Image (tube, rainbow, N blue to C red; front, side):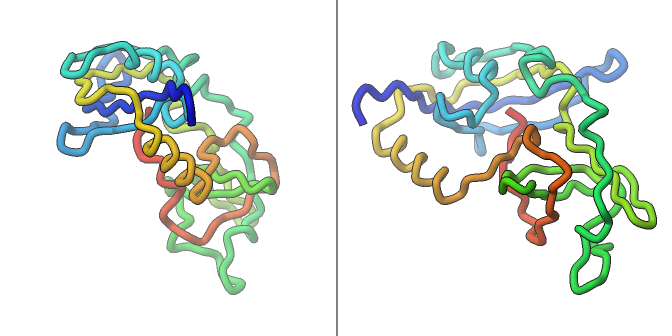
Length: 194
């Protein structure tokens, strides 16, 4: 793999959103368990990568991504009604995992995986919110670059193999009405809101 231009970046940070003029911490990556990623693979938001790529190792950062460069605006059209039968196991509704407020792994007819939040359950429908939990919010990241260097060829190759074996479309952009509930509970492991 010649001309490798990917960087390996590890950061600790606190992520804040604004609610009624008050900063609310919604996520933290510590120095002991930093968020690490390879640039150029779409692991992190493009604007997040751009903000970090030139910051030197050991330096602090404090930047805000407007919602347009983060998870976009909140869209009412991404709140949909799904047939309650999708959420049945052995002809019984999955009450253990499907309840108001639950975040549920879903899969559309194209095989793309994403998360949805249960908003309401009626006699025959489950209302799901497919917006990202941070849609409609500006994201303020405050933290420190722990490591920043060019990725090795073996790291890039290893990451590509990992993607091929564990691919998961964590976005919900492609979801239509053909969503299927997955009966495994580890989600797609996307972890940090980056």
